[in-house]
Image 1 (cartoon, rainbow, N blue to C red):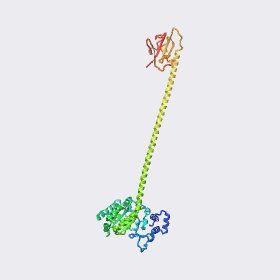
Image 2: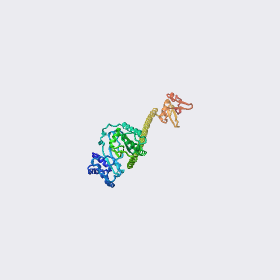
Image 3: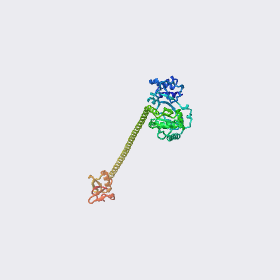
Image 4: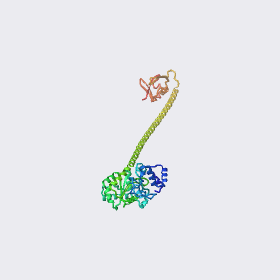
Length: 465
């Protein structure tokens, strides 16, 4: 791994150290030999490991980035093998030919915190598979349909040759299978099939298709298989540096277009040997997978809680907005009613003012008329042979009496009644009894003597209906 940033990130992920300055000092002290720095760190942090130097897995071919010389062998037996760690950068064609890069939800630092470093840690190889000599990064892109088609062809061929009692290989591309394993919080079991290898038929029949292995793998892993004769299987064999067949591996999603190789099994193995390896890896990985599942559940619960809170907030906001809208509508209604009431009050007040003004004008006009009519009567004459005594009774019982010259007309009697202002009605008639005579419009020009009212007369006011 020639890139300084990649070495620093990988060292932090493996050791669990978060201080970049401290990690930089450790790597610089070991001349940026990543394998030596990690070996020194794990040996110093695990006293029991000082008795036996860190050894690579016996089936792994370990190219060292800075020290090509082989490690010296000790005479006592090696320790039990731990997880064989590799960071594998996937070919562009594999990544682009499927659903896309799987973002590592299960980080390497979390894996280290889960207890994997309690076993001896074999750093088998780092970085890009460019040294594989396959040139896979420049190979043509494999479409989603092609990758799935290759996987389905492999499944069909495997079941045709060895029956349908083996692992349940998924009929989809590698990246889709990796995504499926991440979503189900399981490791991905990878089997690379070499049809021409002499050990392949025996391994498939007696190991992979054994009832014990098939049941264990199907229950605990997502299974993907590919033939090295096919494009994606060949590219994965180069990426995983498969040197012996039959080849199996356990991988998990990492970051930055990589996968973490947790264990590889190369060469023919019995079902008992393979089961022990799978059980060990599963046991060591279960804390991380459980933690990842709990973390995902917590995120889902938090998301659901946020959605519920957002929904409650939106409901409360809508209720507040409805109340505010109702309040504004009520205020507008009250304002309209108040404005309408004020308008009616002003109209009524103006009407009353107009009516009062009209009444005052009318009273003034009537007063003027009464005054004019009173002036037109002249002064009341003294008693004499040519003077007629007239008594007028009003509907309210009031009586008025006056003397008139006998030559004045009936109109003068009406003018006299009008000048008194005792009547509110404008239409009335003067009537006499015994015999009843109505002195209406046709008799207004008759004199009192001509009308038979001289020398005296008693009249009453009869209001017109």
